[in-house]
Length: 228
Image 1 (cartoon, rainbow, N blue to C red):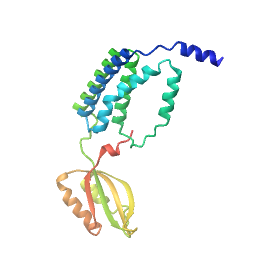
Image 2 (cartoon, rainbow, N blue to C red):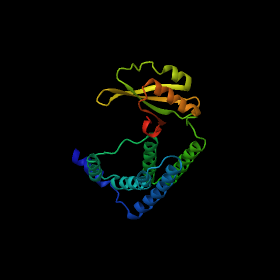
Image 3 (cartoon, rainbow, N blue to C red):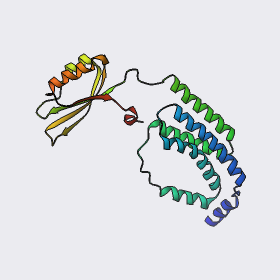
Image 4 (tube, rainbow, N blue to C red):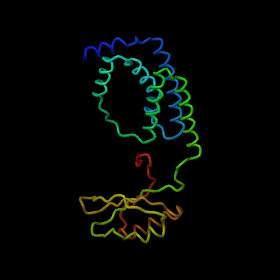
């Protein structure tokens, strides 16, 4: 029974035309270039990731053409991918979205739907440019990261609450850790200042509370803090 199924599958396999693979792979490569340019123009850019987006649709297309109806090739590709161990850090939701975008275009090209792949590419890239142009979902006020060092004998529960109420529109304690062999605490807050011109005065008053120990206030990196 199993041998009959394998014979049916292998007998239905169509030979891969080099010309067909080159045409569809080339189309996927061009669309990948458009996707990469969109990625570069609509946000922060990683050089290696931008280059990968150009190649990825073409690779997906060629692999799909190669394994189409070929059981042996399918098993070989599955085994090869099972040996790959991804050691890079998880990307942002934007980068993951572009990966799926590129793979979708490659799959469409592999099933001869080049026109549909081009339409999808133009539509999705156009939407990215529109969302980037209107600054959709971007914060009006930029939150800051405030790190305050205090001695271990100082109760940090509500010592800065009155200052936060006076100088910030929102504040949140994100992390507490010990430093200097456990003799000090480092408090990490996420704050939004009401008036950025009063930032120095705000920090000076904090220094009066924490014994003039280290106080750091800077912009938050939303790409690192981004959650899916």
